[in-house]
Image (cartoon, rainbow, N blue to C red; front, side, top):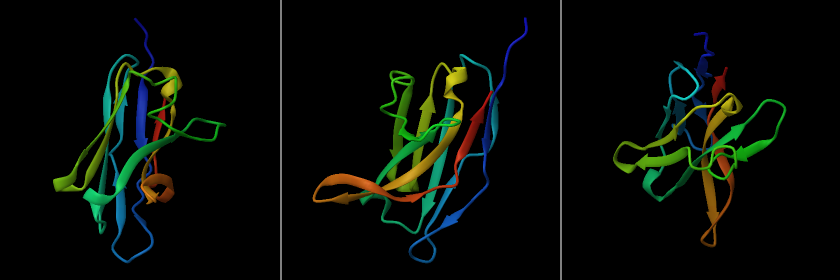
Length: 130
């Protein structure tokens, strides 16, 4: 039986921004088939990680940036978790579909008056293609 492969390719970029020594590094490449699951990893350094708000943002081909946790196409199939002791944030996508093809960015958000305001730092991106 023929099948398509879902390729998760990392743009190998370590982003230095703001203060010296602040970095965001994203996962290594992986190949997955539709229906499988995959976990993307974001490792950070130089931040007060546990007091920062972290999330993943995606950009599908030809579309704008979209918070993956709210996109209707991934609801029920996405989980964002974090490991404060190792300064890591994860994105787990289950039951992969062709429409999951996008660039996934690990992002640090700024909080203003107790509310998440805007993205203050973004990683280089993880390219997920079929």
